[in-house]
Length: 127
Length: 477
Image (cartoon, rainbow over all chains, first blue to last red; front, side, top):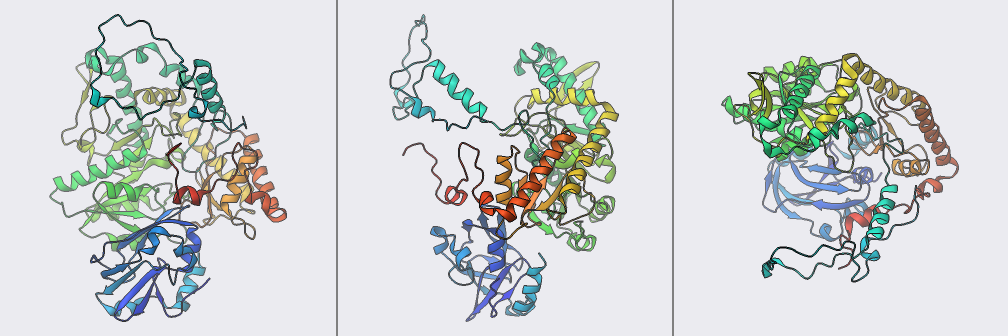
């Protein structure tokens, strides 16, 4: 399992990575591996404001369609357009080219409440 | 099974060939309006015998409960007794028309009235509707009823439904379709609902909870009464998903557990045929709190006559005419044939069969929630390096068994959801268990055999990723 040490994680398997005053979010390597081959990704409209824990999109694999949740509250500033033509990017590089959204957090302190890499590794191993 | 690939009707077509010669027209011919005619629809042209052979061969490729064992979890693929077909085909039902009205449909409405009564007794409800055409429609009816009741109470701010992660898979979609939002509850280590998490979720925006009992992991929710009490105390209503009624019918009445509204499927628990899209019936039973909101019309008896009536605050119609009437005849036949004692035995044997299979398989296929199961259990298929549940499922086809439900429920990784039903005998259950154990050996000694399965079918392993990403939906562009 590949875990980005710089990112923080939600128990629902989304990561949050700081990039200036924005947050980049995608799903963890563990999550993409559990989902299997991803065939479709639905992402929110730019400008949409969502609370921590609210659904921001859907990832569909050959096994299941799963909601993805905001690791922190914020306003969407960009979505990964490359996924429309190549959703398998999430499988290949979940922590790089397969990111899902960028957002401006409403409360940057929510970042600290997320799991760090070590705590997430323990959480993911439980499954 | 007939293993030859069957050509498409278009490939069998030959220009100018006709199957039926119509008689001379003996009335004046009127040309169809030009704007309603199209010339870009090439239909296959075949003689009658070619048509008959084509569809007969296709039917021989069917995998059905009448030909093979079908342990598809949560679908209750039980046998449809042939007497159901005899009663459903009686000329009195077959030759009537829904537009002849109640006066000339007394027998049909009486059957609906009696079936409603039996189903209310079984479920512990005061009223119910035979309208919904399937489980998903029954769910939608139940959630719309909860919404309507909350609005009628002046509680229109209650727009959230609580759905445990062990609930039936369609529940969140139903909430969304009914215009409600979903709050998901995580199960505890035993697969049960976490009561503290439930209490925390119950605020004044909660309209109700959707609960499946037994849950999709095949265990009975022991705290059902307490869960209902917590939700009721917070002003919410309780929806029961009856997908798994085959484990408890004749033993427990869901109405007694505090459930306000529930659907149960006549095409599952009550043996009417399904698979391939129906037709089904998702009966919706209601407690006094919600009875007036039921979809309608409902069969009633007044002054010795049978009539169809709309409940006072009904959410409306869900299906034209009398619903899927022939299914109602089959379910009524089944209920009357079993009687009260027979219904209890049905559920007991469904639970016994599932526990027998679980006991034979759990050392080889680990079960995440190991407590005694109800009518189904969820095992895991990642039993050897590089072998996945999908490989096990595909290899089962080579042994002549329909694969169980796979990768559901989502809370169990590599899930294999096995529901044997009560209609299989010991020899069939053993043959299935033997095949599963054989496959587990193959997974260690010759995993490639599993990766390439199925071998003995007209087409082998399908490219699921390709089919989802680049679907080809037309025979030719």
